[in-house]
Image 1 (spheres, rainbow, N blue to C red):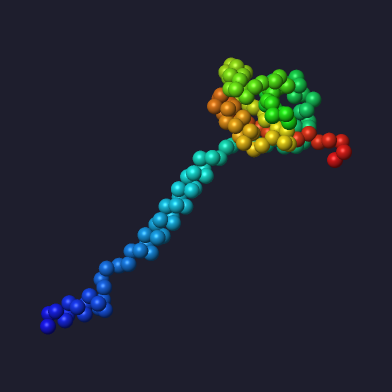
Image 2 (image 1 turned 60 degrees about the vertical axis):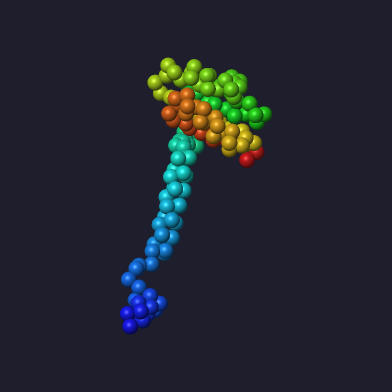
Length: 145
């Protein structure tokens, strides 16, 4: 008689153990979401875009001021304030310019045909050289537009 009670309880009776499979599935999904969120947050880069009117108002003064402009030219080369610089010398040149400056502000100006990776690489080099703030100059408007 004891055998029949055990067999009935095991086959179709009440099972006191909770089903943890759905809970494990939910935890794994949450873990994946948090891992992706951390990976995405590491790739963010703070930039400042100047207002359009402010750039046009300061256009005549920019030649006489001490602003530094890193240009990514259409032919694949780089220049700092219209002075050509090779990519491998960019880090040294930025250090040379900014090491004695208290305000480390750099403007980046890119040609329309440059790839996003080129811009990010140049900005990464500037950040590594100690530049704290990076601003983008808007593309120049042509008279035909």
